[in-house]
Length: 303
Image (cartoon, rainbow, N blue to C red; front, side, top):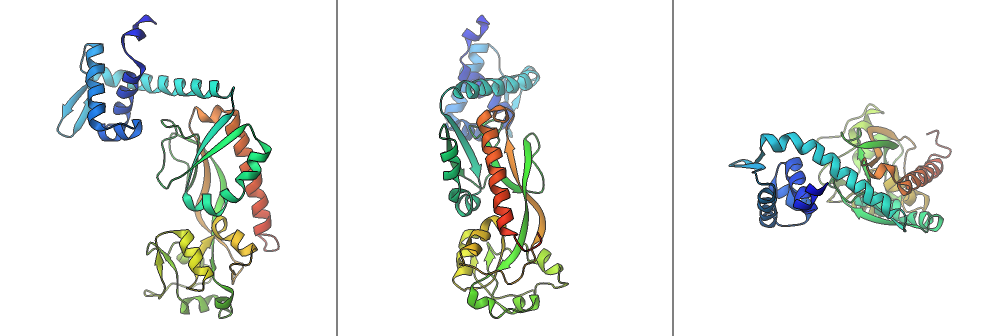
């Protein structure tokens, strides 16, 4: 393995990241450097290996035939190295980085994460509240908790919870609601001008939403929920967002009916992080805690 002395590991990371992302800008963002700095790294790597690795085209960098042939092996090698670093780190206190939608983190996870820490003081959790999907095979993120209709290709993902929607509002506004039809005469709270979940919920009662409806718009689901608490209208919420507020009496659900959207929460890991004992420990705790929440949310409702 003496030939590894001829080129630094950072140069191999540069080659692999550019080849995988297909873009100097995307590769630079992943590695945390400027495109200009990354371009210089690539030039040095090509000089060290004595051959060009990418063709500079108007549309971007195109791997040479020789580079294209070794890129899959190089990506596997980088994943293996990442796994080695993770395995060695398990000898000390484990740090798990969890990428999760901000609204799930603030409305459900943050209220319960202290219980996990108390049970597992040797595992530290770092929460990264992000909407953007992270490449779990090529980042420092160990776990992605995501919402969608299926696991992302190339990742290991396990379903956690089906997403069910239902209308919520303040207690005062709920007094004006006897039948599902009554909701259509009330202000409706929108998230980013969207009416997610309304069509599927109303369809269960053979109703449709009018083309024009009154009500405010907010850029975040948590703000929409707060708006419902203050009596600004009815919001079509989902369980991990609204059920704790229901139990605390901050909101009312005028109807028991909760409808599947077809989406679900997923626990996703990369190939390397899936092998970490701490990841399995967090997964098992999360499943148990969600099950406990579900039993509480759906108690007496029939599911």
